[in-house]
Amino acid sequence: MRGLIIIAGGGHAGIEAALAVAKLNINVLLITLSVDSIARMSCNPAIGGLAKGQIVKEIDALGGIMGRATDIAGIQFKMLNTSKGRAVWSPRAQVDKKLYSQFVRKSIFSTPNLTIREGEVIGFHTRAGAISSVVLSDGVILDCSALIITTGTFQNGLIHIGKETYPAGRFGEKPSRGLTECLIEHGFSVGRLKTGTPPRLQASSIKWDETDLSSGDIKPLPFSVHTEKPFNPPNKPCHIVLTGKECHEVLYDSLEYSALYSGKIKGVGPRYCPSIEDKIVRFPSKNHHQLFLEPEWLGANQIYLNGFSTSMPRDLQLTALRTIPALREAQLIRPGYAIEYDYCQSTQLKRSLETKHIQGLFCAGQINGTSGYEEAAAQGLIAGINAARRCTNQSPLVLKRSDAYIGVLIDDLTTKTIDEPYRMFTSSAEYRLSLRSDSADLRLTELGYDLGLVTEKHYDSFKKRIEAISDIKKILRVTKVAGGANGKTLPAEKLLLQKDISIDLLSAAIPDLKKFSQEDLFTAETDLIYYGYIAREKKRIEHINNLENFSIPQNFQYHQLSNLSAECIEKLSKIKPESLGQASRIAGVSPSDINVLAIYLKR
Image 1 (cartoon, rainbow, N blue to C red):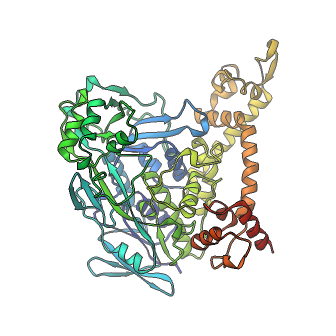
Image 2: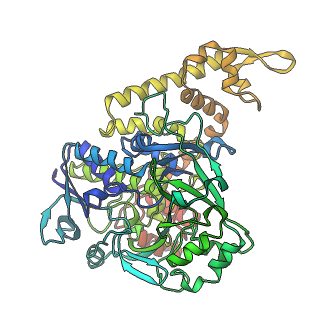
Image 3: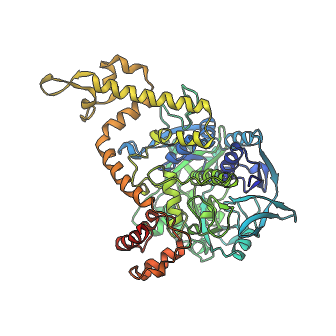
């Protein structure tokens, strides 16, 4: 059934999908409204962050491009959450957004099997319950074997700045129309979400000496295994300012002009990333909020004001900002704005990201109700892999929650009702000890190689890393070092469990450790420190995987089981889980319901 796969949209989901399909030797056509906007970072100039950094590392381990592009374009790298346990340490990078998209575009245009076409997908046709062709806005109809929709915020996008409202997919870019209506005609449930972005300021108008410095790590680690060592990116500083009482009063007294509070916006926004006016309403006792001044590219006169998302009128944005000492002469390059857009309820998807209604139709990115470049890229990669595997009659790739943050992301999307933009957090992953950022390549490179996405060179480096970590553990196991009570010597691996002993200290006493990289030493040390916890976690994973092995037919008639609760029957009939494990994570399905279902399935 090998044929053409079409991708609608050239954002972070679209490019990962296109590159994956092309690498798997399937012809792919990427249709985008503008070639210049491919891989554009339309919001913050950063990649990674809490849980998101883990996702980028996983994308890289599976053969995706986001990690490499970040290392090429990064201007500051920082490991977040280092005051907490290593399981939640998360890498983040400020990037030169121009260089990022240039690198990705160059990669896209040099990839065999991949064609780019400017245009707009406004609909599709099916035959016998499967995708057969797509319809473009200029009337052209293109036959295809699969369609991946990655349209981001463009579907019926509507920008709000105060009382001004106009159609747009992003600032200065027209929205996409027709595809939502086509989905509805084919029986899909569609809703509206809202997100926002802060103003961009002229760097030359900021009083930099009245800001606080926020620098990156002195010895940063790259995202990608492809990046050559030593890794010495620029360490371009960011800066911090605080809002204050006067700023809050300006905003609070003008809430009637906010598109969010005037009732003009119907879509639901993200609780985890509220607008500045939402912050002052929800947290009235908080005297200030932290704002980050982030350069959008090297040498940029354009500064991203992270933490000040708003839908206030332009003049009120400026009035509020000028109450902050460092911004008292601030000039706007572009005001902040809110954007509403259509999304498709993600419970209508299988875990392969293929829709349950139509074979060969996949959705990835913000159309599934997610927020963030990283979540979009991860979905695009999985959708691309599975569209290609469908075209070659192979079983789909499904990552479990215990495999990767990507598995957690997709499982959440396909089992939970999304009523606000979904963002990944480390707290969402119950197996985060096993899903650390430093272990992403160890968990997923073999899989990426088997899929055909990881190169021989990449795979050889992976095998050397596995061997190095094993050698480090062996050295720590057999080498005794003085440090126990009463000066006793103990195996080095035992000493590591003591509070003030690190592998760096042990390296001074064990010369054989000095030949290994910091990354390999860190991973070996972490594995040993958390060995007991990880062992218990693996037992829990084995139990859950037993439930995952019980497949549930898509046409299963739940109402035939009289012992299931009414709420359970309603939820299971709507979501149609693919396994008993997935069914157990649906809200409204109790453990007793799962027991009833398990007994029936065993029979």
